[in-house]
Amino acid sequence: MSLRITVIGTGYLGATHAACMAELGFEVLGLDTDPKKVEQLSAGVLPFHEPGLPDLLRKHTSTGRLRFTSSYEEAGAWGDVHFIAVGTPQKAGDHAADMTYVDNATVSLAKSITKDALIVGKSTVPVGTARRLQELVNSVKTDSLNVELMWNPEFLREGYAVRDTLTPDRLVVGGGSADAVATLRQVYASALSTDTPFITTDLETAELVKVAANAFLATKISFINAFAEVTEHVGGDIRVLADAIGLDQRIGRRFLNAGVGFGGGCLPKDIRALQARVSELGLDRTMRFLSEVDEINLRRRERVVHLATELLGELDGRTITVLGVAFKPNSDDVRDSPALDVAAQLYSAGAEVSIYDPEAMNNARSRFPRLKYAESLEAALQGSHLTILLTEWQEFSALEPQDLEPLVESKAIIDGRNVLNPDTWTDRGWRFESLGRRSVPALATSNSLS
Ligand SMILES: NC(=O)c1ccc[n+]([C@@H]2O[C@H](COP(=O)([O-])OP(=O)(O)OC[C@H]3O[C@@H](n4cnc5c(N)ncnc54)[C@H](O)[C@@H]3O)[C@@H](O)[C@H]2O)c1
Image 1: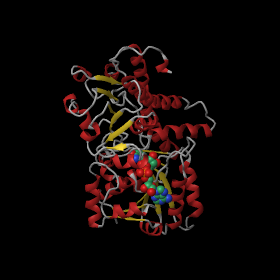
Image 2: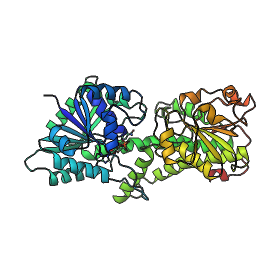
Image 3: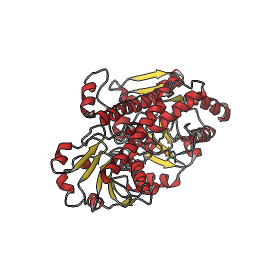
Image 4: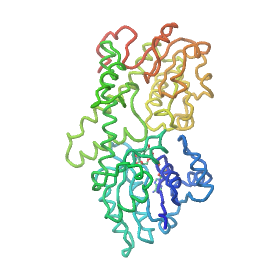
């Protein structure tokens, strides 16, 4: 008989996983404690932007192969394999991950399970969590049942989530008996049929693989951004530098794009949670470099505000257009978005900020209702003293100065993602600034590096 799959927590990760499991032919039940989300997903409506996912959701909810519920009793009685995909956000006022959602979900599920089952964690968690959760499960589950717990971290990228879930570049599975591993092989049979690497390991390694991957990616971005601080100071072009070092195959060019830095619901909180966890373990110095990675990243946002002040003389009373507030293109996610943070900083400094983003307007508005949200790109640019590109949506990367000139008040632009060609803009009389490519005379002091 085909395995019945539940997915506990149906946010970005869980909704994607649930729909993709249905696409692979499984019967799937998604569970979320947010009744509005359950209602929307049940109606085939995706509450966030993810290319390709609305089609899968509609297709499989309409046949009944994919269903959603808020009932742990229903999930526990029905499922054979339960994926845990609830959030692990940063705790308020602390770098550590808030584990209440994972703990609550696991306990609620384990108490409700009425047949032998496998619990598979997918959320990104501090090392040691899975072993602790297995003990929790053992303490609340029905004694006669065999309920195993494994960890199977998720590497999907928002914007490519469907592709990454259906055809992952690797699968990592921690813990579990031989039978449990065989069950997960059955779940992932489609990917395994194309020789996707299937790495089986212990619980701790599986947990650490995920945070190590994110720590590495964050470090790579901050590494190039640290060099951008230098080229801004001494002259030079960070893009050429990145191309040149990226040709060394040991380094590689990807994730070496200097700009306003990383954000989103994963990288920032994951590097902070990792530092917090290793400190708890008594390894205070081990991940200290990640606080530098974090600081370099946050300084890039200040740099954009600094450039805006330089270009405008002062921010108070000036109209600034911000293009993009999603933390990256092809997503409506504004969690820890560098773009939205810069927009808020400009607003706090007195500027009138007019925002346009193809998908992230509603999410941004609910976080910062006082910023101005334009109805269109043209409306956002109208009367602007300065345009700042902060999320590299294709429609922004393709902009030409001629598109903006009839609308803006002043020909001044900051390319916060290094996607525009400076010559194209300066040739038409624009004042053009970017990160890591100095086009105006050097700043007078070395304070900009401090
Ligand atoms: N978003 C990504 O691209 C991505 C990629 C890889 C890993 N992850 C990890 O996956 C996890 C989830 O991330 P996300 O972005 O999907 O978060 P999210 O906030 O979008 O979704 C979490 C969902 O869990 C639900 N939830 C909370 N407590 C619950 C409970 N007790 N029972 C049932 N549902 C509950 C929430 O209502 C919400 O819908 C995190 O650990 C994250 O680090 C995310």
